Image (cartoon, rainbow, N blue to C red; front, side):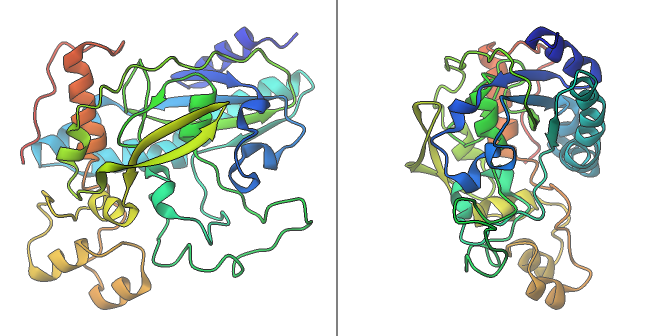
Length: 327
């Protein structure tokens, strides 16, 4: 018999650091194009796997001397390599027991995101370009039936993690867990195995300290405006995000950028344009650093992590204080 306990144990054995289970009804208030159940309407459970980002990945950015580590072993390595490998191992359990499993890593390169407001999608939408997407809802794909959304759907991993009881969404819009604070990414498995869901996390990690707002290199997080969604019978809110500023800061630009690769006026111009545009690639040629997370998520990750650790509220403890960034 496939039980929730067995599924969780196998998830951890396969390589996940966190695992939670949500029932399909918790997603009922989401529009169909943002609902994971649109991909598998017969699913009885939504399993969410969490993958930690090592605290040491931020050290090179903190020192201002080594930036490849966070991108390759952290952000990109997590979504492109480690999540798929873990999901392959994990999903065998379901098929061997006679159930289907639809694995979805944190990667939506083909999603139907025309007409989407990127500001509402958060950091999970970082690889999209609002200068291109969100302009015309008809130029990407069309529904196959009147009662279905156009392919491919897009959904927010942080909302799935919330529904699975893994933590809460902080003021920055970044998901926080009691184990690692902001230091993780998520993947989802939809299955027709009916599993016991976890309770919703009661909250209390984010104390609205404002450090994410204060230390964001792009000044992308509003100190006053809110984004609100309804999910799992609850209303969730976090501070509104200017996605274009967030994307620029993530890749090394921003009003308060600390970027040692910005050594010429041409570099400064390039880093402070929204990445992934054809105009930028044409104009700047080799001066392109869009694939690197040079900003290091200084506000929403580093500042938040340090504050949560100082409060002593995280389960993952360290012998050394993380300290401040070099600039």
